[in-house]
Length: 236
Image 1 (cartoon, rainbow, N blue to C red):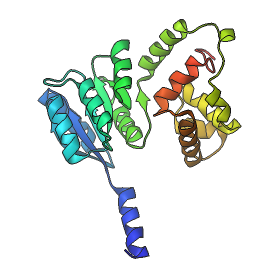
Image 2: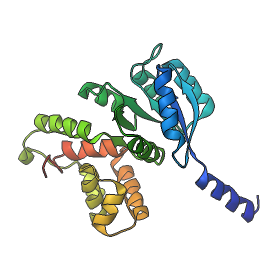
Image 3: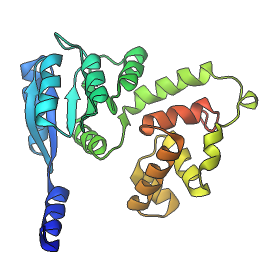
Image 4: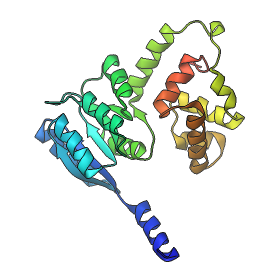
């Protein structure tokens, strides 16, 4: 392959739309989601699944970038399908979109490997943004759900004086620690970039480095670690 061919391939990959698979047992809801995503630039719905077994099979065959998955699916529930996708090592990320938003369901989804969790009442624009964020390697949890979970976590933690930051935090640079604090407060890359007066690309680089140093899979795990270690507390 010549240098020109490689440049063309790189440009093509950069402009390739985010490929989405919809997994919900209600045809009308899938149709509504497809219509909502149809007008979004850079997104393409490549398939639909009516149950968890079909979602897993299509994930293997179509390799979508993101599966928008309901929790309550026949044959194989959404959490089991998410875990199977995550354990398989497929380059596929899962965004849970469901009416079931109990704390236990959200925590189970994160444990299963989901990169995002939103309620079905989310506005279309927010869903599109969430899909793009998840496809780009980020994590998204509806703010109200995340705030509720962090409140529960804070109640279960010992007093700050009894806490010490995980040893791994010492490996972070001063700027990475700053970025980590912003992540823990739920700030987006754009918000962090504005606060630190740097580019979003720089922020993404710092996020990648700190996740690697801390051995974390995504931003959701980073938030949990920040609160578990007492580095950040609600209202702080």
